[in-house]
Image (cartoon, rainbow, N blue to C red):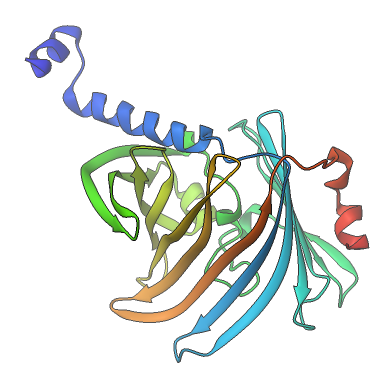
Length: 264
């Protein structure tokens, strides 16, 4: 009956599903994730032999209209101390996101060009392109199926959505030829993903391991990103957020290259 109505309207089932998939991803990006936030963050870098390096950071983020600005300061260990990262994540699809990295050893602020955004962020399994939200108009979306994933708090229903870049330019900038997103149906939170890399037949697996409510908002407090080649794990990154504070008095003029050069 539904299909018959769609055909009467001149719409195919595949077109409706594509639109529904895009609606889901729109709601992922529009989900309330807080504002004026200060957090402590720990980055654990784990190599293929299980050796772990730990980096401590402090992050600040603020919504400016529909845009988001974020600062990340590395506090330890000594080889990365005072390194800082600034990103402007623009809602306008026609506007490229801006990113800068301050390197204290060189006393230099480096702007991250689009050609480098598929590179590793500070030796982690996250890339510079992962540090901002994707431009949804650069992709086509399809719902693969609905499913259930297990969590310590119980089972949650998810949509599994495939994203395909429309152009080679997007593939080159992100480094991904395809991605599969697992989106919770109850809160539109991205809780798992697979990213297919354009080089070396590798796949990155993102998984939100722990979610906590802060001021009524769901916050991913433990997230992993694991790079694999076949069944072999090449590297893993664990991000742990703690002492998450929302609705802080953060001024817009804090989010500048001068701030990352000056430090905390």
